[in-house]
Length: 279
Image 1 (tube, rainbow, N blue to C red):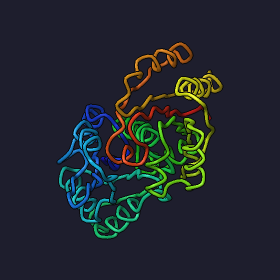
Image 2: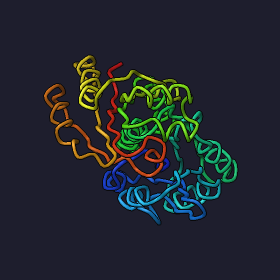
Image 3: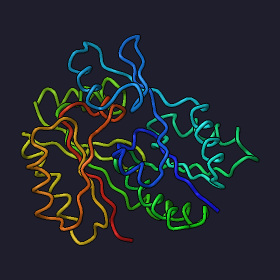
Image 4: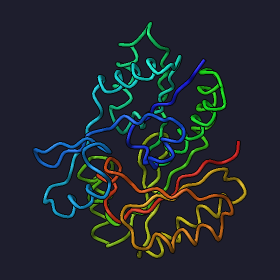
Protein backbone atom coordinates (compact mmCIF):
# COMPACT_ATOMS: atom_id res chain seq x y z
CA UNK A 1 0.00 0.00 0.00
CA UNK A 2 1.45 3.37 -1.07
CA UNK A 3 0.27 6.63 0.49
CA UNK A 4 1.15 9.93 -1.14
CA UNK A 5 0.81 13.46 0.23
CA UNK A 6 -0.82 16.37 -1.59
CA UNK A 7 -0.92 19.99 -0.46
CA UNK A 8 -1.39 23.42 -2.03
CA UNK A 9 1.02 26.21 -2.85
CA UNK A 10 0.20 28.24 0.26
CA UNK A 11 2.51 25.84 2.11
CA UNK A 12 5.67 27.82 1.15
CA UNK A 13 7.56 24.52 1.20
CA UNK A 14 10.91 24.66 -0.61
CA UNK A 15 10.53 22.74 -3.87
CA UNK A 16 13.64 20.68 -3.21
CA UNK A 17 12.11 19.21 -0.06
CA UNK A 18 8.82 18.52 -1.83
CA UNK A 19 10.68 16.70 -4.60
CA UNK A 20 12.73 14.63 -2.16
CA UNK A 21 9.61 13.37 -0.40
CA UNK A 22 7.37 13.04 -3.46
CA UNK A 23 4.95 15.73 -2.26
CA UNK A 24 2.48 17.00 -4.85
CA UNK A 25 1.78 20.75 -4.61
CA UNK A 26 -1.42 21.94 -6.29
CA UNK A 27 -1.06 25.64 -7.17
CA UNK A 28 -3.39 28.49 -6.39
CA UNK A 29 -3.61 31.29 -8.93
CA UNK A 30 -2.48 34.91 -8.61
CA UNK A 31 -4.09 37.77 -10.50
CA UNK A 32 -2.63 41.19 -11.18
CA UNK A 33 -5.52 43.15 -12.69
CA UNK A 34 -6.63 41.17 -15.74
CA UNK A 35 -3.55 38.95 -15.89
CA UNK A 36 -3.62 35.60 -14.11
CA UNK A 37 -0.63 33.47 -13.15
CA UNK A 38 -0.39 29.95 -11.77
CA UNK A 39 1.67 29.92 -8.58
CA UNK A 40 5.03 28.10 -8.90
CA UNK A 41 4.18 27.28 -12.53
CA UNK A 42 3.89 30.47 -14.56
CA UNK A 43 5.25 32.76 -11.85
CA UNK A 44 8.05 32.26 -9.35
CA UNK A 45 8.30 33.86 -5.91
CA UNK A 46 10.98 36.30 -7.11
CA UNK A 47 8.92 37.23 -10.20
CA UNK A 48 5.90 37.76 -7.96
CA UNK A 49 7.75 40.26 -5.80
CA UNK A 50 9.08 42.07 -8.88
CA UNK A 51 5.52 42.42 -10.20
CA UNK A 52 4.30 43.62 -6.80
CA UNK A 53 6.89 46.38 -6.81
CA UNK A 54 5.85 47.46 -10.30
CA UNK A 55 2.08 47.09 -9.89
CA UNK A 56 -0.28 49.82 -8.77
CA UNK A 57 -2.91 47.23 -7.80
CA UNK A 58 -2.82 44.65 -5.04
CA UNK A 59 -2.69 41.11 -6.43
CA UNK A 60 -5.50 38.68 -5.66
CA UNK A 61 -5.44 34.95 -5.04
CA UNK A 62 -7.88 32.24 -6.07
CA UNK A 63 -8.25 28.65 -4.94
CA UNK A 64 -7.31 25.88 -7.38
CA UNK A 65 -10.27 24.52 -9.37
CA UNK A 66 -11.42 21.03 -8.31
CA UNK A 67 -10.11 19.74 -11.60
CA UNK A 68 -6.53 20.58 -10.62
CA UNK A 69 -6.81 18.42 -7.52
CA UNK A 70 -8.63 15.68 -9.41
CA UNK A 71 -5.84 15.50 -11.98
CA UNK A 72 -3.26 15.30 -9.19
CA UNK A 73 -5.13 12.38 -7.60
CA UNK A 74 -5.40 10.56 -10.93
CA UNK A 75 -1.71 11.07 -11.65
CA UNK A 76 -0.77 9.60 -8.29
CA UNK A 77 -3.11 6.65 -8.77
CA UNK A 78 -1.56 6.01 -12.18
CA UNK A 79 1.88 6.10 -10.53
CA UNK A 80 0.84 3.36 -8.09
CA UNK A 81 -0.54 5.22 -5.08
CA UNK A 82 -3.35 3.45 -3.27
CA UNK A 83 -4.24 6.36 -0.98
CA UNK A 84 -3.78 10.12 -0.88
CA UNK A 85 -3.76 12.40 2.14
CA UNK A 86 -4.42 16.05 1.32
CA UNK A 87 -3.33 18.74 3.78
CA UNK A 88 -4.94 22.03 2.80
CA UNK A 89 -4.69 25.69 3.66
CA UNK A 90 -7.06 26.57 6.52
CA UNK A 91 -10.67 26.47 5.33
CA UNK A 92 -11.24 29.77 7.17
CA UNK A 93 -8.79 31.49 4.83
CA UNK A 94 -9.56 29.96 1.43
CA UNK A 95 -11.90 27.76 -0.60
CA UNK A 96 -8.94 25.52 -1.43
CA UNK A 97 -10.06 22.72 0.89
CA UNK A 98 -13.52 22.76 -0.69
CA UNK A 99 -11.94 22.20 -4.11
CA UNK A 100 -9.87 19.33 -2.75
CA UNK A 101 -12.99 17.71 -1.27
CA UNK A 102 -15.02 18.09 -4.47
CA UNK A 103 -12.17 16.50 -6.40
CA UNK A 104 -12.01 13.63 -3.92
CA UNK A 105 -15.66 12.85 -4.66
CA UNK A 106 -14.83 12.91 -8.36
CA UNK A 107 -12.32 10.07 -7.98
CA UNK A 108 -14.30 8.02 -5.45
CA UNK A 109 -13.85 4.36 -6.33
CA UNK A 110 -10.55 5.04 -8.13
CA UNK A 111 -8.37 6.02 -5.18
CA UNK A 112 -8.87 6.62 -1.46
CA UNK A 113 -8.47 10.36 -0.77
CA UNK A 114 -8.55 11.88 2.72
CA UNK A 115 -8.74 15.69 2.92
CA UNK A 116 -7.55 17.37 6.13
CA UNK A 117 -7.99 21.01 7.14
CA UNK A 118 -4.57 22.06 8.43
CA UNK A 119 -6.07 25.06 10.28
CA UNK A 120 -2.87 26.93 9.39
CA UNK A 121 -0.89 28.37 6.46
CA UNK A 122 2.59 29.00 5.07
CA UNK A 123 5.25 26.90 6.77
CA UNK A 124 2.82 25.91 9.51
CA UNK A 125 1.23 23.88 6.73
CA UNK A 126 4.65 23.09 5.29
CA UNK A 127 5.87 21.49 8.52
CA UNK A 128 2.72 19.35 8.75
CA UNK A 129 3.22 18.23 5.17
CA UNK A 130 6.85 17.30 5.83
CA UNK A 131 5.98 15.17 8.83
CA UNK A 132 3.20 13.35 7.03
CA UNK A 133 5.32 12.80 3.91
CA UNK A 134 8.17 11.38 5.99
CA UNK A 135 5.70 9.05 7.67
CA UNK A 136 4.32 7.99 4.28
CA UNK A 137 7.81 7.35 2.92
CA UNK A 138 8.50 5.13 5.94
CA UNK A 139 5.52 2.97 4.97
CA UNK A 140 2.79 4.19 7.33
CA UNK A 141 -0.83 3.43 6.48
CA UNK A 142 -3.28 6.11 5.41
CA UNK A 143 -5.08 5.84 8.78
CA UNK A 144 -1.79 6.29 10.65
CA UNK A 145 -0.96 9.41 8.64
CA UNK A 146 -4.42 10.90 9.16
CA UNK A 147 -4.06 10.24 12.89
CA UNK A 148 -0.61 11.85 12.92
CA UNK A 149 -1.95 14.98 11.24
CA UNK A 150 -4.70 15.20 13.83
CA UNK A 151 -2.11 15.06 16.60
CA UNK A 152 0.20 17.66 15.02
CA UNK A 153 -2.31 20.34 13.97
CA UNK A 154 -3.04 21.68 17.49
CA UNK A 155 0.71 21.72 18.22
CA UNK A 156 1.57 23.83 15.17
CA UNK A 157 2.08 27.58 15.63
CA UNK A 158 2.70 30.45 13.21
CA UNK A 159 3.63 34.02 14.15
CA UNK A 160 4.72 36.84 11.87
CA UNK A 161 5.88 40.44 11.99
CA UNK A 162 4.50 42.51 9.12
CA UNK A 163 5.85 45.73 7.71
CA UNK A 164 2.27 46.89 7.09
CA UNK A 165 -1.31 45.72 7.56
CA UNK A 166 -2.39 47.23 4.23
CA UNK A 167 -2.41 43.92 2.36
CA UNK A 168 -4.38 42.07 5.02
CA UNK A 169 -6.79 44.98 5.28
CA UNK A 170 -7.39 45.16 1.52
CA UNK A 171 -7.64 41.40 1.28
CA UNK A 172 -10.26 41.26 4.03
CA UNK A 173 -8.20 38.96 6.24
CA UNK A 174 -8.17 41.23 9.30
CA UNK A 175 -10.42 43.99 10.61
CA UNK A 176 -10.09 47.40 8.98
CA UNK A 177 -10.16 49.25 12.30
CA UNK A 178 -7.02 47.47 13.47
CA UNK A 179 -5.31 48.23 10.17
CA UNK A 180 -6.16 51.92 10.38
CA UNK A 181 -4.97 52.09 13.97
CA UNK A 182 -1.69 50.47 13.03
CA UNK A 183 -1.16 52.92 10.19
CA UNK A 184 -2.01 55.93 12.34
CA UNK A 185 0.46 54.94 15.02
CA UNK A 186 3.16 53.84 12.54
CA UNK A 187 3.58 50.60 14.44
CA UNK A 188 4.76 47.20 13.29
CA UNK A 189 1.88 44.72 13.57
CA UNK A 190 2.30 41.12 14.68
CA UNK A 191 -0.11 38.38 13.71
CA UNK A 192 -0.68 34.74 14.57
CA UNK A 193 -2.70 31.98 13.00
CA UNK A 194 -4.94 30.58 15.71
CA UNK A 195 -7.75 28.10 15.21
CA UNK A 196 -7.40 28.51 11.46
CA UNK A 197 -7.77 32.30 11.34
CA UNK A 198 -5.47 35.33 11.36
CA UNK A 199 -5.41 37.18 14.66
CA UNK A 200 -3.55 40.18 15.99
CA UNK A 201 -0.70 38.98 18.21
CA UNK A 202 0.65 42.33 19.33
CA UNK A 203 2.25 45.50 18.05
CA UNK A 204 5.65 47.10 18.38
CA UNK A 205 6.94 50.59 17.61
CA UNK A 206 9.89 49.47 15.49
CA UNK A 207 10.84 46.56 13.27
CA UNK A 208 13.73 45.60 15.54
CA UNK A 209 11.33 45.33 18.47
CA UNK A 210 8.84 43.35 16.37
CA UNK A 211 11.54 40.84 15.41
CA UNK A 212 12.71 40.67 19.02
CA UNK A 213 9.09 39.84 19.92
CA UNK A 214 9.17 36.91 17.48
CA UNK A 215 12.47 35.68 18.85
CA UNK A 216 11.03 35.90 22.35
CA UNK A 217 8.11 33.67 21.32
CA UNK A 218 10.66 31.05 20.28
CA UNK A 219 12.47 31.54 23.60
CA UNK A 220 9.21 31.10 25.53
CA UNK A 221 8.80 27.69 23.89
CA UNK A 222 12.46 26.71 24.26
CA UNK A 223 12.73 23.04 25.11
CA UNK A 224 9.28 22.33 23.74
CA UNK A 225 9.94 22.91 20.03
CA UNK A 226 10.40 19.81 17.88
CA UNK A 227 10.61 21.45 14.46
CA UNK A 228 11.02 25.07 13.42
CA UNK A 229 11.03 27.18 10.28
CA UNK A 230 11.76 30.84 9.63
CA UNK A 231 9.90 32.36 6.70
CA UNK A 232 10.43 35.70 5.02
CA UNK A 233 9.34 37.92 2.14
CA UNK A 234 12.33 39.57 0.50
CA UNK A 235 13.90 40.65 3.79
CA UNK A 236 17.44 42.03 3.88
CA UNK A 237 17.60 41.44 7.62
CA UNK A 238 16.69 37.75 7.46
CA UNK A 239 20.24 36.51 8.23
CA UNK A 240 20.40 38.55 11.43
CA UNK A 241 17.00 37.27 12.51
CA UNK A 242 17.93 33.64 11.81
CA UNK A 243 21.09 34.13 13.87
CA UNK A 244 19.00 35.40 16.78
CA UNK A 245 16.72 32.35 16.54
CA UNK A 246 19.70 29.98 16.37
CA UNK A 247 21.08 31.54 19.56
CA UNK A 248 17.89 30.34 21.27
CA UNK A 249 16.98 27.15 19.42
CA UNK A 250 19.68 24.54 18.86
CA UNK A 251 17.78 22.38 16.38
CA UNK A 252 17.66 22.68 12.60
CA UNK A 253 16.12 25.91 11.31
CA UNK A 254 14.41 25.47 7.95
CA UNK A 255 14.43 28.76 6.04
CA UNK A 256 11.61 29.36 3.58
CA UNK A 257 10.70 32.10 1.14
CA UNK A 258 7.15 33.37 1.47
CA UNK A 259 5.55 32.69 -1.88
CA UNK A 260 2.93 34.48 -3.92
CA UNK A 261 -0.14 33.15 -2.10
CA UNK A 262 0.85 34.16 1.42
CA UNK A 263 2.84 37.13 0.13
CA UNK A 264 -0.26 38.63 -1.45
CA UNK A 265 -1.84 38.96 1.98
CA UNK A 266 1.20 39.44 4.23
CA UNK A 267 3.16 41.85 2.04
CA UNK A 268 6.84 42.36 1.39
CA UNK A 269 9.04 42.64 4.47
CA UNK A 270 7.21 39.99 6.47
CA UNK A 271 9.25 37.70 8.69
CA UNK A 272 7.68 34.81 10.57
CA UNK A 273 8.30 31.68 12.57
CA UNK A 274 6.44 28.40 12.29
CA UNK A 275 7.04 25.65 14.78
CA UNK A 276 5.65 22.51 16.31
CA UNK A 277 5.72 21.83 20.02
CA UNK A 278 5.99 18.51 21.80
CA UNK A 279 2.82 16.73 22.86
